[in-house]
Image (cartoon, rainbow, N blue to C red; front, top):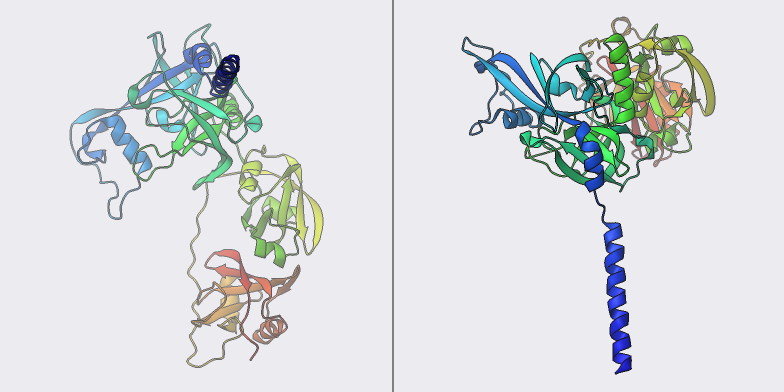
Amino acid sequence: MQVVKALAALWLATVCAAAAAQSQVLPDFTRLVEDQGGAVVNISTTQAIRRSTLPQVPGIEDEEIQEFFRRFIPRQPGQGPQPPAPGPRAESRSLGSGFIISNDGYILTNAHVVDAADEINVRFTDKREFKAKVIGADKRTDVALIKIEGTNLPVVKLGDPAKLKVGEWVVAIGAPFGFENTVTAGIVSGKGRSLPQENFVPFIQTDVAINPGNSGGPLFNMRGEVVGINSQIYSRTGGFMGLSFAIPIDVALDIQKQLKEKGRVARGRIGVVIQEVTRDLATSFGLDRARGALVNQVEKGSPADKAGIEATDIITAFDGKQVESSSDLPRIVGSTRPGSQVGLEVWRKGQRKTLTVTVAELQEERIASHDTPRAPKPAEATANRLGLVVAELTPEQKKDLRLSSGLIVADVRADAKADVRRGDVLLMMVHKGQQTELKSVEQFNRLLAGLDKNAVFTLQVRRGDSTAFVTISGLTDKG
C-alpha cells in the first residue's frame, strides 16, 4: 500500500511539474498589452471623391473591405481603372493604425493609410480624438509621420530589429476592420525578406494575423518594444493566409527623421544595373561561393563609372557592410546619405579590389526604351556548340547600339543550350574567372571548341537597352 501511495505521489508531482513547465513555455501577453496598448491609436481618414472613380468588388459594400481588395488582389486583364464620370461627390473612408513615438504627438503609420487624405482623425483607447496633419510620407518604404497637438502622451518603447530571432514570439496591436485595440500574436517567420517593387525594405515576415485596419500598427517583441510597422500581407484570397510583413523599426525611424527635418527622403545611388550571383555564376567568375551583386551595366558618368566600377565586377561589400545577396545592395546604397564618400569591395578577374565611390542622390527613374536590333535569319547556316547561329555586328548596328564589338544572335535552334533569343547581342564570355570580349564568330567558336562538354561558363547578353549575365551548363558534342 505504501508503494502505491508513493507511486501516486510521484505521478502527481510529475504532472504538476509538466503543467508548470508548460505554463512557462506559453507566453503571457497581458502585461505587454496593458503597458503599451495606450500608445497605439486608431487612424481614420476621409477623402472627397466622385463615386464613379471607385473600383468596386461586386457583393461587398463596406468601404474598408473594398480598400483591402483593391490593395491586395491584382486586377484581371482588361479591368483597369475607369475614367471618372460626372457624378455626386462622396467621402471615401479608410481605417488604419499607428503608434505614438514622442509625448508631444508624433505618430508613425503607413504612407498608404494617409495617402491623399483630406482629413485625418486619431482615436485613443480612452476615446479621446484628435485631428492630425501629415508631416511627411515616403511611398517607397510606405512610412508616414503624422502629428497631433498634445502633451504628456503615452509613447511606445522602441527595440532593435537586428536582435530579433526567427521563431521568436511577436505581438501586433491594431484596429482590423475597425475593431480597436485588437491583439494578435505569432512568431517571426523570416527576416530580410525582399518583396516585388520593394527594394529598400528588408521586411520582417511573421505569421501574426494582419487584416485591413492593422496597417501602420506596431509589431512588438516580448519585451514590449516596437520592432516593426505592420505593412503588408501575402494573400491569394484577399484574406489572411499566415504571411504578414512588417517594416523594421530602424528603417522607419531613419525615414521619419528625414521627414521631420526636411519633409522628404534623400536616398543614395551609384548608377549600376545588377543581378543575383547564382552558384553557376560564382563558378564562372572564380568566386568562392554565391554571394554579392553582379554588375552587368554601369551608367556612363555615374558615381560608379567615376569610381572605376566595371561591368562583370561583383560587389561583395559596401561601406563596410557585407553584400550577401543582390537585394542587399539597393538597401545599403539607398540608406547612404548622398555626398558620402564610401569604400566598396569588388571581385574582379579572380582578385579582390577596393574602390572608393561618392554616392549621388536617387532621382525618379528614367525609363528608356529601344528596339531590339533585327538580325536576318539565314536560310542555311551552321549552329555552334550552343545551338546558336551568330553573326558579327555591322558598322550600322555598332553605331546604333554604341558598341565596339559583339555578336548578334541570328538564329536559335531547337536544341539550343543558352537562354537567349534571336536579336540578342553577345558581348562577353566568362570562364573560370577569365573574361573575353567577343569580337568575331571565328573567335567565339574557337573558345567554345576548347571547352569540355560539361563546362560551366557565362555570357554577357544585351537585349534591347538592358544587359544580363546568362550561365550555361554543358555543350553539345564537338562536331
